[in-house]
Amino acid sequence: MSTGQAVAPALETLREEIAAAAPRVDRGECDTRSALRRLGEHDLLALGAPGNRDGRLPEAAHLVEQIAACCLSSAFSLWAHRMTIEYLQLAPHSQAGALLPELRAGRLIGCTAMAPALRDVSGVEEVPVRARRDGGELVLDGPIRWASNLFPEAVIVLPVHLGGRDRAVVCLRATDEGVRIHQPPRLLALGATASSSVTLTGVRVPRGNVLSEDLPGFVAAFRPTFLVLQTALCTGLAGASLEAAQPRLTGLNAVFADEAATLRARLEELRRRLGAHAADPAAAAVADLLRMRLEGARLAGEAARLEAALHGGAGYAVGTPTNRRLREAAFFPAQSPTEGQLRWELSKYA
Image (tube, rainbow, N blue to C red; front, side, top):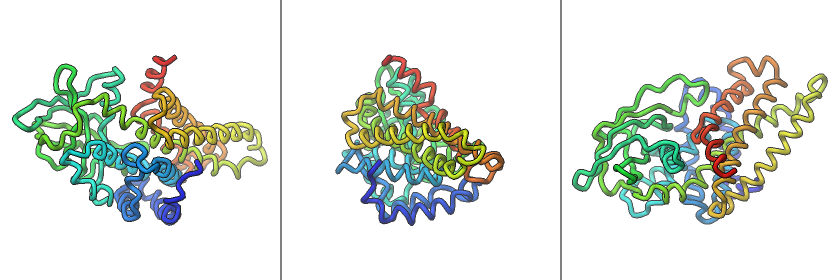
């Protein structure tokens, strides 16, 4: 994408800092909050929110792509944080909007738990968290099966099931009474993103923290940004792998030259589509966004595999950037919407 001019002055320095910290982040010696705070210091956490406000979603995609190229953990936390800001911006009359200044500054961390909303609207499965009305509040019970950025005092946005066909989107805090965050499991990569499951037991949400009671409409509003920025994660990692692979296409490894060229061409085409959809997300067809996200996941995996093949032992030795990208790329088929969900949804458009 030929975007990101406005973020360029700060981006190179931030990239260097995040890249330098990437090995420690990968080992779990530090987490991703420092990167979010640094991005917040430069007012880069809310670019284009909501939708394509002021035409700046291409800049947000460029930022995510550039960070993903040097540390997918940091970029993934950025994506989750940016989406939380998106949700609150889409509900300007909610009391939760008071949290936005601290979120934009990176002093509070945003956690998106909206994957069940996408599955519900698509007809895959119902939202698992149940809610009942009690006076002016909603009382929540049930599981958040997976979420990231579950740091202390995180701002969590999630869908809830009100019974029948009624759904809502609510905002709560990780410190609210009745919120139990489970011990994070050991992950192949992205272990520094505070990713785990949550159990909600009698969590009370005031009326002012209900962002929407129109789940299909809310999903339609945020889904283009959601998929655009997820695709930017993929193109960032794919680009880094292909850049690292290029110097190795000599000697016996010259047999990989055609494959590398094909992957580079696919990456450039995907970046072109990504840039077009970021520039006009409202005009993007849902099927086109889903195809773009699926292609991104596949391309990242293929590029990381090629890099590993060309680097030999470095692709197998834990601690090298090549190995890290190989493990990071394995995340994309599992990221919601998963490869299975993407393929299932696309089958309905065939």
